[in-house]
Image (cartoon, rainbow, N blue to C red):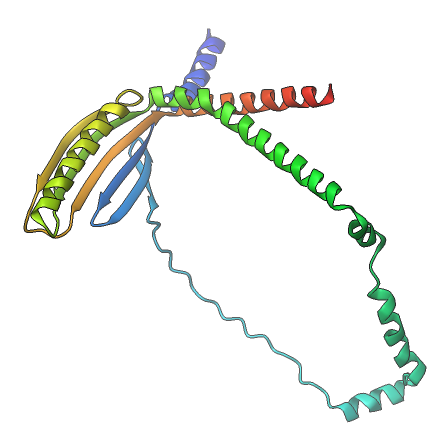
Length: 247
């Protein structure tokens, strides 16, 4: 019995964190965007990031004093290692040899334009096929995540203004159509709970002001399952493509 209790406690400790909700707190106010993430009562601000005071540590590099040419010649003469004119001319003779192109460079220059274009087409097709595999691998896991995402406490407060009254009225109608039709469309994919939506018009205001915010939450096990499915689908598509090219 004790062993079963220990196993049950370990399983609970492993499963309970996966059932927690990962929350994203989103806020747009005064033309500034705020984003923070949190689990339980922990919360960390992502955007804008808090500025960290960095203490600048100046490192003083002491450069040794340069010796004069006369002292240098004296040292060389004392050691008996005076370079001869022939030794000085040797590096100059070796320069053309070092500047000669290698065999790989010659081979690259001699390649025909048709071979280069063929290689470019092959690289382009491989890139396109890789992008298609990534998109296919993301489709089903993304649908699974959208079904389990929930938006809570959605708050939208917009005051529409403009320079001319007729333009303000047109903008007010467009805002109503965009907000309410957008919410109706999003509710087909994501669960949304609105707290307050207010669209007002002010003919004396020259610019439109917007304040919006909400909480997006998803369980941690959903994220893990979606990530595993993405990796599995990507590996399967890659293996299938490798088998097709091998045949």
